[in-house]
Image 1 (cartoon, each protein chain N blue to C red):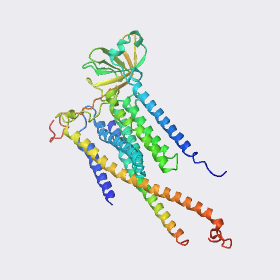
Image 2: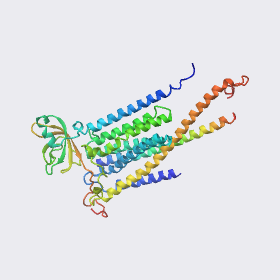
Image 3: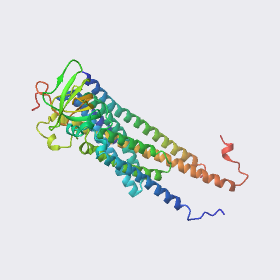
Image 4: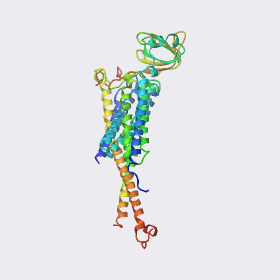
Amino acid sequence: MKTRALGMVGLLAVVIAAIFGLFVVPPDANQGDAQRIMYVHVASAWLAYLSFGVTALGGLLFLWKRDLRFDAVALAGAEVGVMFTAFAIWGGMMWGKPVWGTFWQWEDPRLTTTALLLALYVGYLLLRHLTDDPMRRATRAAIVGLVAAVDIPIVHFSVVWWRGLHQTATFGDPAKLLHPSAPLLFVVALMGMLTAFTIVWAYLMIRRYQLARTAWQIEEHGRLGRISAARQAAVRPVRPVAEPHPEEVGS
Amino acid sequence: MNDALFVIAGYGVILGGLAVYAVTLARRLRAAREESLRIRRDARQGSEPGR
Amino acid sequence: MTIARPAEPPLPQRRRRWGLIAAVAVVLAVIGYFAFSSIGDALVYYLTPTELMARGDAAYGQSVRLGGLVKAGSIEQGASADLTFVLTDQTTDVTVHSDTLPPSSFRENSGAVVEGTLQSNGTFQASQVLVKHDENYVAPSGSAVPSHVTP
């Protein structure tokens, strides 16, 4: 119930932030209306980082405590993070075409490392299908999740370390952001969208975690069922011969 | 202007995608919970006559 | 005959663990290679005018990306899609000519990245003009700003 309320608050916040970013805030003097995409683009990228950070942390805690609940948290982060990475890339393309003059540039370090980030976590999700053993699956996923997390700081600092088309981080220099020349409405619009997306993210993470736990319970039950069935099959020959097999007679 | 189309495409896919994911997730969760409940009920009924 | 030797099971598991560690090491090595090879010259997204000119005769006819600032007052836009401007890194200037229209955000004193080749006459023939903007967003001056916003 509380989770549903969180989802409702998130929905409301996103609607308000979108109206604010689309209609209230003036367009950028140089880029025009296309700059409005920045609000959803940056918010998506931020939540992609956060999701994959949670995946790494969940993996680390799983390896330490051997508790499958941490693996469920890591899985939630990976799936939600893949979605937000795809959104960040899509928003970036829709912003890049009118402003840069191109949808995509393969040699740009920010774009290439982000594409790698998406590929790594799609790989993480695929890898989870390789084995039915929950502990082994969680262990492998945790290691891959930790290795893939190396790309998170590479993506973030790619605009500082290497030359590219992509501008440096919006929040890279707080002094610049809080400078009087930075329009306050832009800052408010971005902070609003970041907050709204983060609330929605928390809601989705909780729901995805619940799904992972429920799926695990179903999986576990199937395993127990197979074990008890095997045990019964092994016991059956010892039973008295006079008793007919109930499975064959009934239904 | 032409820019508006990109803004609509950007916001539309991202916000629409979020909504679709949220709805799909809720549906997956409901299906899983029903399945889990059904299995537990079946297990209780299945084991009772034997004991 | 049916008695399993107790020493048998742990061995494959240990071997599998080493396989896993090896796989992780390979992935890390590949990531590391990509990360550090691009610090070098192998994956530079664009050259500055000074770097291009430093190549001397080798620069001519080579397909490269050139990045810099659009020099103030240098933009000459002819009929429909005939654009000439000067790209500078404050040390070296390169005159760029393009037959394709740049995006509407193209301005003097803003960053640009052009893709093309340096001709023997010293001008750079660009097949694509991209605008590299920075992260400073500016509210439009004049009536477009809501009255309650102080510039």
